[in-house]
Every structure is written in C-alpha cells, then in structure tokens.
Length: 167
Image (cartoon, rainbow, N blue to C red; front, side, top):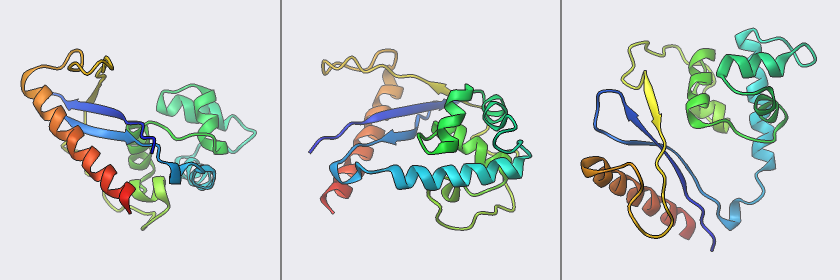
C-alpha cells in the first residue's frame, strides 16, 4: 500500500508548540477524488457569492485569488474542481465567509457559523516549512523541543492514518 505524507506545520508566534495543519495522505481507496473536488468547487462558489466576489465571467477567479493571496490560476482550480487550497487559506476562507470549516471542506454539518471570535488563539499563525532530507536524518531547521514535538505529532498522525487504512 502506498502512503505519501506531506505535513505542513505551523508555529504560533511567541509559542513553542508545533501544530500540524495539514497532512495529505494518498491511499489506494482514495484515488478517485473528483467527486470531492466537484462538490468543493460548488461550495467555494457559494462562498464567493457570500463574500460579494463577482460571478463567473466577471473576474471571479482574479478577485478570489487576490482576496486570498494566490494566483488566478490557483483560484480557478478551486472554482472548477481541479484542486483544494492550502489549509491556512481554507480556514481564512471559512472565517471570512462565516461558514463552518468542516462544511467548506467536506459538505458535512451546518453551513452557517454564528461566531468566529476575533481574538482566537490561532490568529497570527506563521507557516514554518520543515525540510525532510529523505535519508532518515532529522528534518532541517528544527531542533530541541520543537523536534521532539514534531516527532510526537507526526507519529500520532501516522498512527491515525494507519488505523484508518486498516478499516
């Protein structure tokens, strides 16, 4: 069974705690994701409507890209079901549109969110790239407590993934 893990890790400003914000996994039973992408595209278009972004054919791709700091090409992929945004962008999109992150990403649960607190503990997260050399050595640029916490987080994530793969 092939597994590809691509973790994205954030380090909140002024804190020593690492948070894995995205863990992409490719498993054989997840190969056909087009229906998920198509459904996500419909929800992104609803979010655009809520945010007052012009309709398709009236600069929607460029406006969406500008709003979330990505290229028009990246925004087009979300709108037509060719890709998902990074987790940080998805979170910001949900907050700005006042919709549930779970609803935005999966279509499950309530769409509406009544309160996203502006003094959330996760505001101001800074993305920190971690490079894994691939030769079994420690990741580059992570040391001490950060490295220990990264190992624990990735081991926990791997455990969850392996458990899901056995089902």
